[in-house]
Amino acid sequence: MTVPPISVVMPVHNGMPYVEDSVRSLLAQRFGAFELVIGDDGSSDGTSETLARLARADPRIRLARRENRSGVAGSLNWVVSMARAPLVAIAHADDLCHPDRLGRQVEVLQSRPDAVAVGSLFRGIDPEGRVVQPPHYWPLRLHSPFAPFVHSSTMFRRAAFDRVGGYRPEAEYWEDLDLYWRLLEIGRIFVIPEVLAFYRHSPVSVRSRESDEKVENALELMYRSTAAFARRCDHAPLLRSGAASVARGRIHPRIFVARSWAALWSGRRPGTLKRLLRRGDLRCNRTSFVSLAFVLGATLSPRAVRLAVCSWREMRNRLARRALRGGEIVEWFPHAASTNAGAASAADASSDFGQTR
Image (cartoon, rainbow, N blue to C red):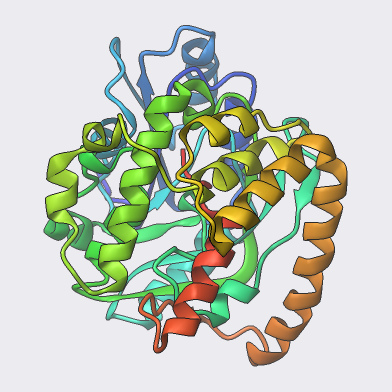
C-alpha cells in the first residue's frame, strides 16, 4: 500500500451537526494526496453513521471506532498512532479548512528541514458558520509562550511528535500547547500569516461539554506551567502534581476572561461572572481589575464588547501587517526578550487562548 505524503487526523466524539462540513472542507483541499484518519471516540449522536457514509464515497477516509471515550489527549494520540505519513495535520470535527491549507503547509515543511511544525492564522465562526472573529496578526510580533495559531491549523513531522512523546494527558485541555513547547526543544515552529483555518465557537467543543470546575482547574495548571515555561523552567513537576492540586484553591482571574470568549464570539452571553466572584483570586491589582471589568462588561453587553474588541484588533492588525514584510513566514519565538514584552504577550493571549478542543 502506497504511503501518502500527509495524514490528516481527526478525533471526534459526538460531532453532529458539524462533522460532515468539517470533513468536506478537507476533501476539497487542492493538495489532494493525503489520507484522512478519523477516530470515532464513542459517538452516539449519529456521527458514526455520517462518517460511514462519507467513507464509502471517498477512499482517502480511514475510519476507526472504539466504544468508550478516552479523553482529549488520549483520542489525539490514538488517531496519530494510526497515521502512516511522515507529515501529520490536525483537524477538528467542527472546524473548517481553507482549500490551500495542506498545500501551503507542505511547502513550508519541505523548504525548512529544521522545522518540526507549522500553523496558520484563523478566523472564528459562530455555530451557523458566520465569520465573527477576525484574524489576529499582532501576536506574530510578540514573544509569547502562547501559540499564535490554533490547534486545528497545525501540521507537524510525525518523527518529531514521536520523539517528544506525543500529547500528555496531564495537560488535558491545553495538550496542544504543552506539545508545542516540547517540539521547540528539538526544532523550529513557523506560522503562515494567512487565514487557512476557521475555528468554530460551538457548544459541541470539548470544553463546552465538560464541567466548569474541571476545565477551570486544568487552565489554572496551564497558567502556572506557562509562568514556569516563561522563566525557562521545567513544568513537568507541575504536571505530575495534576489539576487536582488546584481544585480547592482560588484560581487566576484571567481564566474567566479566557472562558468568556467562546460565548462572546458565538453570540451568547458568558456565564462566568458568578464563577469569577466565587473562585477567582481577586486582589487589589491591575490583573484583577481588568479581568473583573471585562467579564462584567461581557455579561452586561456582549455585543458592545465584541465590537470594541474587533475595532481594537483591526487597528493593531494594520500595524502588524506592515511589519510582516509582505506575508513572509513567521517563526514563533515564545520567550520574551524583556519583561514588558512578556506582560504584553500574556495580555494578548487571554483573548485567543482556548482555541483548542
